[in-house]
Image (tube, helix red, strand yellow):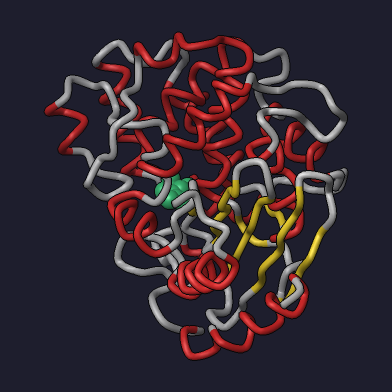
Amino acid sequence: MDMQNLLDDIVGTIKPHLGQGEVAGYIPELGAVGADHFGISVATREGEVFASGDSEMAFSIQSISKVFALALVLADDGDRIWKRVFREPSGNPFNSLVQLEHEDGIPRNPFINAGALVVTDRLLSISENPSTAVRDLLRQESGNDSLVVDAVVADSEARHSNRNKSLAHFLASCGNLDNPVDDVLDAYISQCSLAMSCTDLALASRFLASNGMRGDGTALLSPPQTKRINAVMLTCGTYDAAGEFAYRVGLPGKSGVGGGIIAVVPNNCTVCVWSPGLGRSGNSVAGMAALDEFTTRTGLSIF
Ligand code: GLU
């Protein structure tokens, strides 16, 4: 079966899952998105795109941004971040406070909220244009110069961010933030509120399937750094469902509470799916089903 037919077919087979799960309501503006959307895009290393469903509709990338922030920090600052963030699966909700206190303010991994706040803090310290660094990388790699922060979503999250504020203040109390809490939260919220389509995200993620090479042929990351980001995505990218994701999908992946998930087939292609209904761990129900279908039918998994 060719790729386009496969994606069209997946759009049909996941229909029973549409509307399953809950649209994220703790950021009210995300809760306003219709639950019945589904999109899927595949981008090859060479930049060829196959897409189906709502693949061109922009959605809030939320925690998928954490991968790109980490890539920028590793690219500019090497391994230093690993003194401030572990890289073990958390087995806990993405916004858990309990584990952080038990572990003296060192977050379990860079993809839970506490870990991403530390990565964002480091990006603020080292980047020349910290407020636009993640957006600029995503624009360059997707080729979409018009992608922007959705100010309404950002405002909605900012007004409902007591939990992330708690995490940030606790990190600061442990000496694990260098910048003011409010600056870190603003940068974190704005990168989470970038609006992108499945096709944008599949294209922007290609460096993860290309040994760290950017679309223009320059290196963002070395091959070993790329291997390591993919490893952390596999073990920690879908929160306390990372085991289930590995079992069903068998690829490095990163989800966001906007309902998007990116997955990487190393040295081959990237896949982005989007559907807003989330399961208990905060991952898109239909998105996970679609990726399961994709890897099961193509055999494109790392296992
Ligand atoms: N902005 C969201 C938060 O901080 C991101 C969570 C997610 O996408 O998993 O709660």
